[in-house]
Length: 244
Length: 266
Image (cartoon, rainbow over all chains, first blue to last red; front, side, top):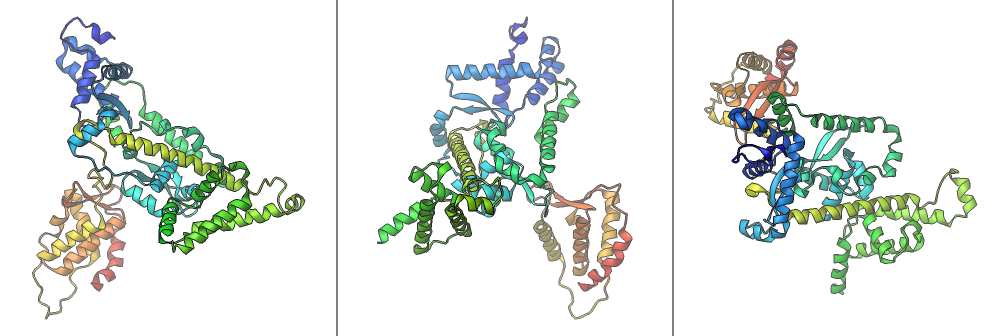
């Protein structure tokens, strides 16, 4: 790593900086926000610090991975996790009971089976209709769905183009955080469950709308992951986009 | 007898729906899901429904629908193969196929739900910095930007509370109309851009004037001319124009006329 080969001894290496930022941050950090701090510091201090401004997303991600491995190896009780697209410092799950005792969080609410089933269907099939969920579960899901929306685990994505313009549901950022998932695609068997045949067959007359929606979603995603742009304004814009 | 009843009750409540019950029956008898002995399973399913009735459990309509489906499949299976073909499309498969497909799919999502449950239990032990454990329930970070109708009504009440008791003996002529107030709000928003509800009602002393103003706010929100927003929990509600260049100002005249009637009703 170029950073660690700096001529001045006191200059921290990228891995250290990333660790310090994750420690200090009150919320999960995206790579872009880390890079913004690097650029600001680099430009502000100048001199040997200028090299930090040049750190790329890939370098930062590499540093985080290094940090992850180091923490894991040295059994510090801490780790870095990638949840909902952002990195955060968290305790090792094995130490959870102690942390819970310390924080007096022994009463945690768990979701019921019907809620979990409904949530699983929404997660894999999103954006999906209430009728699709009911088809899979074989029962009415009205009340469960409403509760999940109240809990902010499920949200209304938009109205579909089907007759009566029923709502389409999807999962929220909080869903990812609650289950510690980075993205929906990380759920096991997501390809298979997403493309299960009955829905495809039955939705024959509406096939035009669904690929469109998926295309739209893909466009959204790819625009978020644009190549490194070093201008601060662009970075700010991206960070803002991520946060909204 | 009571004991047995309770036992049944406990095991029955586990089923989330007819599919869940069917899966349970299939698993219990270790039958091949792709080759369900429909007669036996139907009988067992009906037995359970019967039990639920005896136990006074509310049987959801979904359970009844499934029993009808099972009966239909059973009756089709009884038909000789040739007659089946004659009755149905050439391509028609095993009458159980639809149900099997549904069951298999349900099973997959049930497994997926189990996985989510494991993750949830795991995450119970994980705390991020700031001990920000993600809590379920209506969270404070909810977007408060859009004020609800109840917030608006609360402000109306507040404004009405400030008004002195009117002299009820006299009958006043209708001084204010909703349309008038619409114009008033629109004109003011052209200058101020943002007005708090409190300021809007400020200085108004008549009940009727306040009500008209309130209705004007609702009307303008309905027409998407203005938005009522709240920057924070319990913060004062602010009205601001929506898309100021395009909308505000246009078509206000007709509104003034049509709403006159409404205003007078109050």
